Amino acid sequence: MTLKSRSKIADLLKGGVVGAEVTAKGWVRTRRGNKNVAFIALNDGSTIHNIQVVADVPTFGDDFLKDVNTGACIKVVGQLVESPGAQQPVEIQAKSIDIYGKADAATYPLQKKGHSLEFLREIAHLRPRTNTFGAVLRIRHAMAYAIHKFYNDKGFYYLHTPIVTASDAEGAGAMFRVTTLDMENPPRNENGKVDFTEDFFGKETNLTVSGQLEGELGALALSEIYTFGPTFRAENSNTPRHLAEFWMIEPEMAFYDIEDNMDLAEEFLKYLTSYALEHCKDDLEFLNKMWDKELIERLNFVVTNKFVRLSYTDAIDILAKADQKWEFPVFWGADLQSEHERYLVEKHFKKPVILTDYPKDIKAFYMKQNDDGKTVRAMDVLFPKIGEIIGGSQREENLEALTTRMAEMGVPQDEMWWYIDTRKFGSAPHSGFGLGFERLLLFVTGMSNIRDVIPFPRTPNNCEF
Picture (tube, helix red, strand yellow):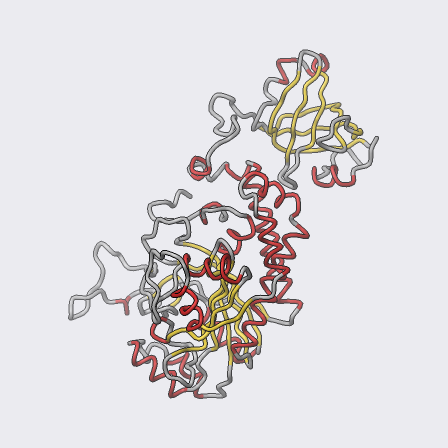
């Protein structure tokens, strides 16, 4: 090992060779000590744990070490030795220390410990340096990798669907417009409306709310695909569960019926949860200790329990008979709220739940209708603490049924001609679902606010960088 090489702190703590000369680089978390020796806690983001650097004060000098304070970025060369303390197996006896960047103790916002999550949201550019957000971001990476590994290993193809689109998959209308027109003086047509034919794409375009519809096109050629990308909702919702920009995983599978769809969703969620438990142990233990004492227990709850499957109608019967006061009334045709979903999971069944066969009037136009004419083959996966974590359905493959439903719901068929074409030419049974990545991370990390599981949250009146 040469002096120029750098060892990650995670590697030093797990398998560093005692007696070897090592180079570590990172940011100072704390410095303590006395007139003879300084103890520097160093972290480079590779692990929740710091490595202790022991520096001889007379050798380095008080004037130099006063700048090796919380927030400073340093390089340390020294000998890796066994640590006498119980906090870590090894530590570094420093031979040389270089300061890459100082951090003024009077103005560095993270100089003290114990900041609230609300305060840290105000300094999102620095919060990744804290233990909490370092843990969250490492788990976020692990889950993103696990998602790609799961689908790759099953033979799915990763399809990149458009971010700029002319369609509104959900029919919600809460979309961010994309335009090159001068909005202070836009061109107008004879009716006085903005003339989007002069826009860059020659029509009105927006940021996508979902990759599902385009994903269906891929599935009807490649059989099994998944999308994983950013989506956008222009909803003025200042809640702990809403973001204006978030990420979605949306698999679409030809030849899958609703039962196949549920099987995949359950397998997928158990795989991700197991992956987190196996590969993010240190970070999960930290979050379990600091933020959510039941986190690891809840993760194991998902892995060890077979998901209950029941119809929406049966769920309504259970909720109506429950000895429980509801904030939102329960009746057939109501869209279930988080309080209803969590009751089914946490109190009634004490297992994750998959609800199916929802009333068609509360679901999207593309869901396949059941023979009763009242319900559709929708499915929602319900988790403890979160409520709905996955929503999906078997898609309507019948041309007449699809166009009839589009007309009933006012979905413009002339704009959706490409989607309708897939039912004209070689239509096939197919299914899919959507998993909000940040919703998954709320569950896996135990954080209570969705703004704390994405590096740079985009919410109403908040877009700093």
